[in-house]
Length: 383
Image 1 (cartoon, rainbow, N blue to C red):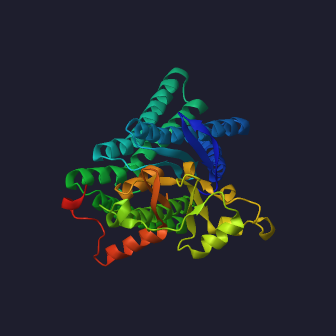
Image 2: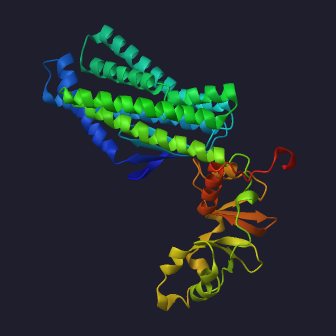
Image 3: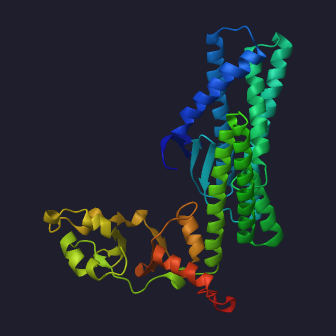
């Protein structure tokens, strides 16, 4: 997510924090210290309210982290790749690959809300216990507030609309019942769009009636509409790519050049005649060694182009997406990077470059699908 920075790792998963998280902590602490605690436990000093509110806000953010960590751990234990966990003002986001079965998708989705409900139940229970032992006080109020916040978070996330966890649960159930993953994704995305619009309208009405919290509700609704729309579009792309092998999508032959050439010579001999803005590179033995982009070549000063080698400005093979010709394109994209977006793809067979798949190639497939044309081979001809 743009605007986030890496702050560490949680159980082996990279943890990122959006700039809005400190803002959220300040807002939560302010509301807890200036409204909730004075109303529940009047008569304390401002310093006590301030300290308790900061502790409560940090504990709530820790709860959100546990919610997202539960998703990540459940996914990794079931073979789903996890790229990172990001905390931001609307909660958290775990970037992961697509589960291969409906059962895995269901469990990965439901574990987050269950974690929040368990944390909420424990916090309320401990708060009640502290109240029974010591009477109503600031620690009890913070625990009860934390518990109810987590219970509300768990229930809200179970609403049947993407990108909420409840939408993922519904998606998994539809997938299991129909066997059509893309249909399930479209249904969950549609429900997310509807709920998002409802939240935007409800939040705006609430704000007009004097409740500033309505703006927050509208922001959540807007976020849901945007993400749900993106997921519906992704489902459409996956439908267009269903059954399409890498060899069906690739451009071949493709202009490739030796990685030991100077930038100037590469531009004259290869780039000037290439059809794509990304070109594969070959080593001395004719094996793929990486890719180079036109903008990387253009960034080399003219006076240095006869000295620098093209491999010095290239993306090495280790950072490229490589696939065999008969692999399914959709699986290659998911395997390469959780959530897709791993183009271009170098198509390699027994160490030899066969072709390349770029965004242009994928867009062409999507447009052909819109015309009712498919490049996927019939079932009987697939290897």
